[in-house]
Length: 211
Image 1 (spheres, rainbow, N blue to C red):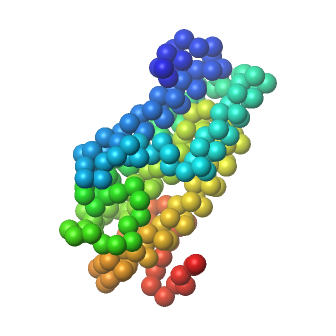
Image 2 (spheres, rainbow, N blue to C red):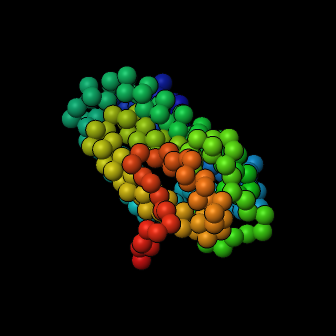
């Protein structure tokens, strides 16, 4: 459907077709990534379509902005250079995320684990040798890219802020569990590798644990 919209719709609507194709590809490959990397956890939730109410609300806000600006400022939505920039951000962000999923293999899950499963190992090879949270880095830039594709100036800023706040908190909580799971091994890993997310340090030993 997204491809048809992109090629057949009026110029000021075409970006939404590209966006729809990007969204569809992302959610299908999320399911496929889990099917390849950790099939024992595979379920309908692996599409991450029901990620959260906030995720749905953010999507609706972006659709509303696109619709209003397409009507009142049609030339804005015809600036194809932003389609290309946004597409590249989405493509490479999603690619990084899927590489991270496959590299982590059975150690990757969509939900933060608070109990260490048998066979759970600390992954430090491949993309994890350059950043501690490559799947989050990929998702962060992908989310911003979706709004650049739509040429949504307001939601581009909003998505950047909300995504940053979400991953700041997510990484903090996840790294508390990783310290509990791997102890000194994770401390050494933190010393040598950053999170990969801008201005996000994660949790380090000695920091207060937020409740």
